[in-house]
Length: 83
Image: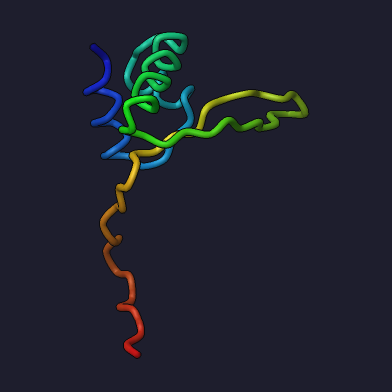
């Protein structure tokens, strides 16, 4: 049900934490985590568990991105060197 909105958000914004996805899409964090688990099992996204520290407090989260998706080059990037 929330699969498409989460996939659209990841395609537009790239790699994100589960808490960032929940805040941006307005979906409750437990629902986002459940959906991410489902999408990962289907092979749609890649996930990994991360621990970040905010003011000395450990915060557990899930970092995810679309599987096999390479975002387009940003404007102004120099061309790759030719061999």
